[in-house]
Image 1 (cartoon, one colour):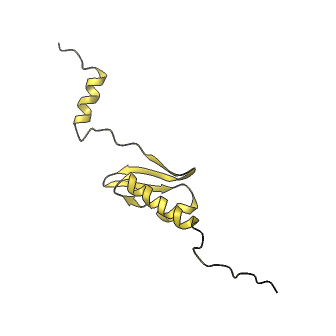
Image 2 (image 1 turned 90 degrees about the vertical axis):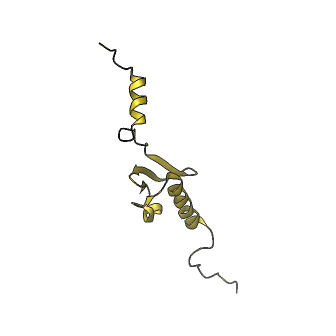
Image 3 (image 1 turned 135 degrees about the vertical axis):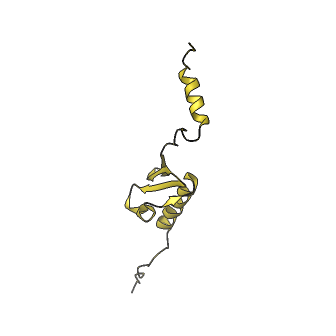
Length: 95
């Protein structure tokens, strides 16, 4: 009777089978010290789930890669924090 394969052999054999390969883990996307959200693998890419309202417009979007999702979050953060964007309040004038 042949010996049962070891756990390492079993995992190696399973990894070679594309139908049995372990899925990639979800990835946390952080911008500096701010958590933008998580990228969860799914067929065709990763789906972004926002963790704060600042990133809500990106919530549910499917990106081709984690890097593309992180780039979108960085761009969103940069546009929200860039000084001088949006409507400016009128300046006070000294009399």
